[in-house]
Image (tube, rainbow, N blue to C red; front, top):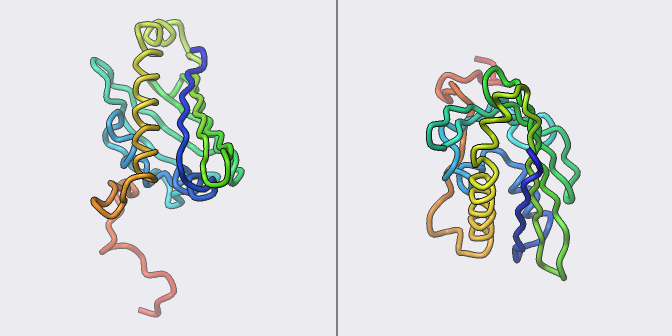
Length: 177
């Protein structure tokens, strides 16, 4: 698929915006409208090597997406590799570029593209996938702007946890018990 691009300008420092975007556990708070069953796949929630898995909320679509952060250059760039469709045969990429705008504003440029693994996957994407994805990306960046520009104390954001993680049964590292 050709790249799908979306952008937004946020009234917040670039470092603060980058740290929030790079934290995968915060994604359901601003991307939850098109992601279902979102959970972390690794204990690390941010930075290079962090990973998550979710199901795309689209009509007649049962696609799981595995997301892994492959490059994190604070505060400029965050690159993610995606694996989707059956058996993860379609590769995809998401790239967040953060540019300063004036003293206290940040422009976030989001680019998403895929490399279909088979002709069937390419056909599925051609059936309106680009338009649907563009709408969802624009809406999520709008929600991201609201997180920073509206009062965050009103309602806490939804957060993701590690799949199958139970804090009460977790190992107590450093304890002598």
